[in-house]
Image 1 (cartoon, rainbow, N blue to C red):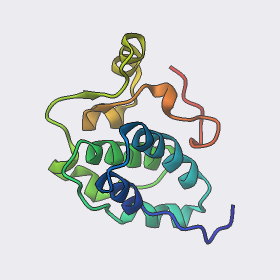
Image 2: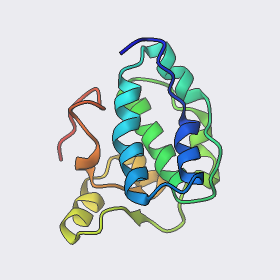
Image 3: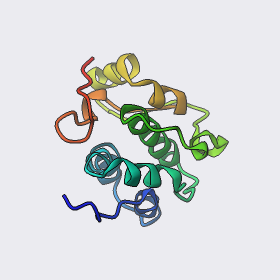
Image 4: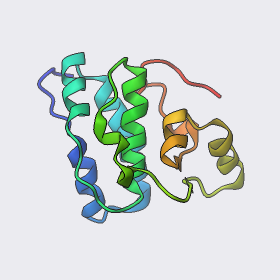
Length: 138
């Protein structure tokens, strides 16, 4: 992928505000974002993380922040200050998977950033083949 490829966290917030279906949003944030991030050179990755996405006032704000925190840690970047804004945390934990077994995986094996923000995906949704620098297997 070319180094001039543009990635913005704002695009994911815009998708939320545009009313994308939940399944498409989940795929975009948990699969597309890490893969596209992984393809960028380190200086571009840092720039993507530094630009806070606008708040949507939905639980997706927590998932976007958790994903950004998770990939920042995986790629050795400093954590951006915006991920600690109170609006990017959930008061009540959101467990994304519907199936009982997948919910259990989310509760037991979700990476720390997701637990901290209160948005728990099935960790198998964090695509180790293309999006993450290191394989993460529970």
